[in-house]
Image 1 (cartoon, one colour):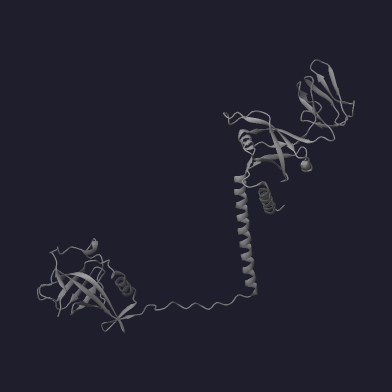
Image 2: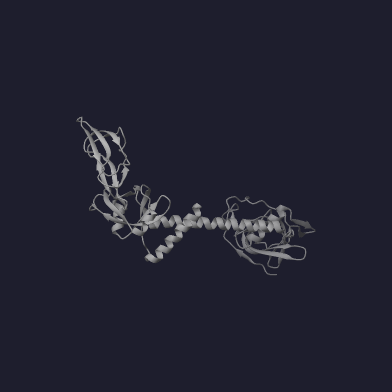
Length: 372
């Protein structure tokens, strides 16, 4: 007979192994088991995560010694053995066969299977039969209920849903890509652009009140008359055979000051023109080589050339810079006089040929998303 007992220093009786706070933190359960120490077999009384109570023959000097113990659970047809290191503590007088085996490391590798056995016992899956254990818990996964194949209507509905989800996903991706593209590539001027035609502007020659207007006046006819503050009546005749564009102050009864613009004389072959002021940021992008474009109210994009009329003061970022816009004769048909537009600057990362194809593709996507 071989005993595997190792003497250890004396420890107080209320010392708890494994870092647990309370000695009775884990309750004792009456689970049938056998404690094997070397060739000795002791009957297991109760068991917990931290200690076990056994009964049997031990060497006379076993009290307060340390030993390696095997917890053996005999099921019907198989056995489970868990090896733990424990401190031996005798219970009762010297003739008592009862011992408390306090586990030195309750969280060692034996913990997982021991906890499973204890939890199964608490759940009622372990039953006792003449000192044997029986397991009544599940032993295999439940079989799935056979599924009925979908009919034609269900298959069609699934296909329609998948197509709808795919279309929505593609639309959201295209919309997000278009937004990111606009944020990176384009920069818009905050002031709107009003397109007019080139021609001479007739201004009031004196302060007073307009008493007569004639928007269809021909060459030599009176265009308007002004009752001056001096008491004189001033009449202005049409100086050319051209069209008249009334301005905002050109109506009978309007009170005007000297120099107020009244009408614009436009020739039949006059080209559209735009005079505006752009921000310092826009002028900087223009100088850096960005392309200028007009975005019309109907979504048409017209390339333009911008000419700065004043020197940009770099020290004042809020200053405005006067500029003139000119159009390519081939694009004049896309412009409507009197229509509002936005001036934008387009940064070029790729060659112009590739950039033109990409921008055309984004315009097509934007028109598709807007339904136009």
